[in-house]
Length: 168
Image 1 (cartoon, one colour):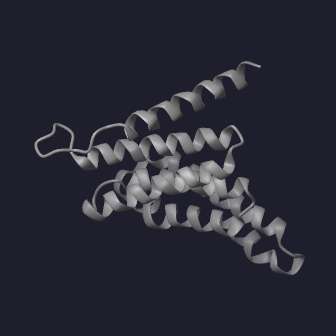
Image 2 (image 1 turned 45 degrees about the vertical axis):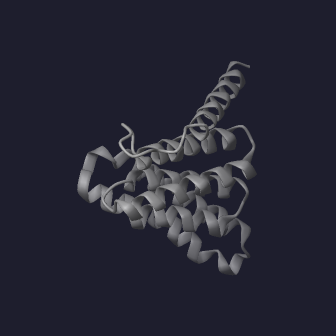
């Protein structure tokens, strides 16, 4: 199947990108690319790899890789609070998707909620149409996580998640 071949190629490319970035030397004073830029590239490559790992069924590895991406972006954001919001939001969203694939509904809901409340809502106010598609996708993913969690719960405790899903 052509789709499987493309998926394999995408996974291989994402893996190679991560390997190349890991082999980069530590940033030195006066380098053209500062340490934050290199760390940003690493987090971006890990985020892409996490998505490809999840799509190819390696969900446990995808969760680990997406978590590492989120951690790097959070450290970058601590040093430069105005930057990295969209990147963190996308990494959190990918992490939420991978938790959903493992049917870890609480973690999935938490990651999607964090992406929305801490990042996408602010980005939407700041950039409007530029982030609207990602914001809408994140809202849909949060609703899916609530539905997944509702399906996993007893009938009596489903109500709250079903109402949350409808809100998103």
